[in-house]
Structure formats: C-alpha cells, structure tokens
Image (cartoon, rainbow, N blue to C red; front, side, top):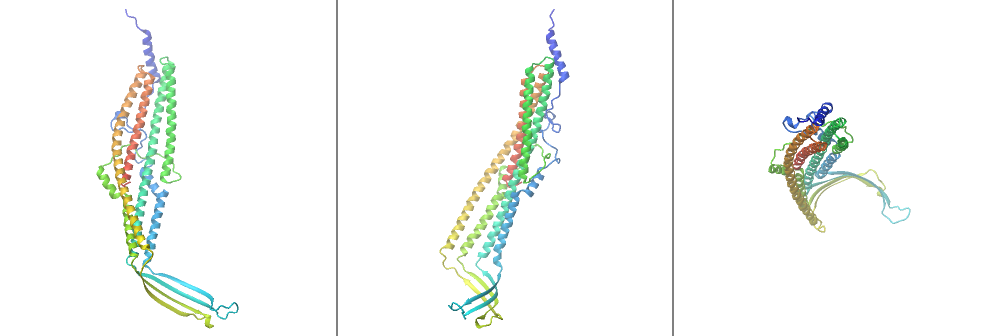
Length: 453
C-alpha cells in the first residue's frame, strides 16, 4: 500500500490557510478609471471628470491676461500707434508763439553808451507743408504697415505663451498621473509584504522573501516621494508660464486621453502659410520698407511750404518803447534739393538693402514653418501609434501580474517573479502616461506651428 506524503499535504494546507488569513486584494487601477478587462480604451491613473477642476482654457485665459510678455507686446503696439500719429502730424500746421525782450547797443563805447536800446517783440508763427510729392503719405503708410507688423508680433507672443502654458499644464497632468501610478505601486507592494509576512509566520516562505518585499516597498515609497515632489515643481512651472506670482494647487479638469487631429499634412502646411503671424509680420514689414524706399527716392523732389506770422514789436531806439507796432508776413516757398553729398542716394540704397534683408528673413521663416509643421505632424502621427502600443502593454502587464500573484499565493511562483511582474506593470503604466502626454504635447506644438491655439 502506497504511503501518503504527510509533509506535502501539510504544506498545501498551510498555503491555503495563509491565503485565507492574509490575502488582500491588489487594486490595479484607480476607482475612476476602467480596467483593461472592462473593455474600452485604457486610461492611465490620474484622469478627472470633465468640468471638474482647473481647465486648460481657464489657464490660458489667466496667462493671456497676466503674463508680462503679453503686456509688453501690448505696450509696443501702443508705442507704434503713437508713431503713426507722429507721422500724421505732417498733415497739420505747426503753430508757435515767440516772445522776446532784447537789450543791445549799436556803438563800441565802454560806458555811458548813448546808442544802447531795448526791444520787445511778440509773434505767432504758422508753418505747414502743402505738398512734398508723396513723402508725407509714404511715411504715414510705412508707420501703419509697421503697426500691423507689431500686432502680428503680439499674436506670435500670444501663441508662444499659450504653447508654454499648455506644456506646463500637461506637465502637471503628467505629474499627477505618475503620483497615482506610484501610489498604486506602493499599495500593491504593501499588500505583497503583508502576504509574505503571513507566509513566513506559518513557515511556508523564507525570511529572504520578506526582506525582498520590504526592499521593494521602500523603493516604491522613495519613487512616490520623487513623484510628489515633481507635482510641486510642475505647479511652479505652471505658475511661471501663467505669469502670476501665486496660484493654489487644485485638481485639473483635463483627462489623459488621446487627442484627435483631423488635418492632413498638406492642409496643415497651407493653414500655416495663411495663419502664422510671423509670416504675416514679415509681409507687413516688407510693405513698410517698400514705402520707405519710395520716400527715400522722393527726397530728390522739392517741398512746397507755407508760412505766416503775425505779431507786435518795437524798440526804444527812438526814445519810445511802447506802444508796440503790428507786424505780419505770409510766405510761400519752394525748396528744391540740388546736392547734399549723395545723402539721398545712400538713403535709397540703405532702404533697398533693408528690404532685401527682410525678404531673406521671410524666406527663412517660411522654411522654418514648413519644417515645424512637418516635424510636429509626424510626431503626432507616431505618438498615436505609441499610445496604442503602450495601451496593449499595460493590459498585458496587468494580466501577467495577476497570474504571478495567483501563482505566488498557492506556492507555484517565487517572490522574485511577482516583484518583476510588479515592476513591469509600473513601467508599463508610467510609459503609457508619458505616451499620452507626448500625444497632447504634439497636438499643442502642431497647433502652434500652424498659427492656431
């Protein structure tokens, strides 16, 4: 008759007792996020419901209202608008009032000079450019075109601020999600440590399993501290991007989901050519410089000027200072430039070279726009595929972890296998979070590349 192996039976009984006494469920995903087994898209921990918390639109609005770069660009628009009005002053007359009192002598005597006399005068003068063959008009139009360029520069600044805010906002979103991942890892390793200690207490697992579980838990806790610190630094970056001195930490409304983008590459490039403020700024600068070329060439042409004055003056040279005698004059002049040392010729050359320089800068900027749109479009396309791959990796890593935990609970797997499965799952979750954030950043950068927000 075959003898029953009592030692093996006792070992199996001890395993099941340990499972009943110490088994704790391991939560793989946060309560507000569906698990891969539940079907649908996998969402990484850290997402919040829409409409709850700080939205990206609100953050952008705060930045556009408070950032010093935006305000500086607004002041530059105001300064250039003042330049336009300065140039328009050429359409109006210039009026000034001159008053003088003078003591003089017509002789060379040293003392008691009987030829010394006093004089008093007061006169209002009016001068005005009647016509200067388009020089006045060209200067005004150049200033207006430069004002348009300044407005486009403001739009460029705004778009860059919006991009920086989005990047910082997604940085906070990423940091929050990684905190959730690490919190979950800590809970899993705490549960594993409790199980291992239970097994050790009943004599089914060695002390080395307990020490390994403890070491893994301490490492997870250290990673959680790093992740929590990253949240603080991310919020500091967000406050800086918003241009505010203080802003309280709060939940975010954005979710960790993949963002769709409907344009083709050619459509994105065409949209960039028509919308990028940098290109439109160069176009306005070229128009302004073209007007300056015309003004410089017209400096060879004459100016027709009008002037008039009316006042009173007198002197006591004849022994009587008052009353003052009226005095007036009207002047119409034609100033014809003949030669000024080739100054006008060189002014034309300067304006032409500036125009060509701006033209080359515009060509370079256009090439940069093409490159930025293409690179960001390709990055976006790749990011979507990377998210899909990492989504599958998370699901597989979760299944692998469940299998090894079950095998460990009944004694068919070692703690090293469970630890490796936990590490694989944590890495898969972390990589998935990073992939989704990379997708959101790619969309933000592509929108910036085509001149949108």
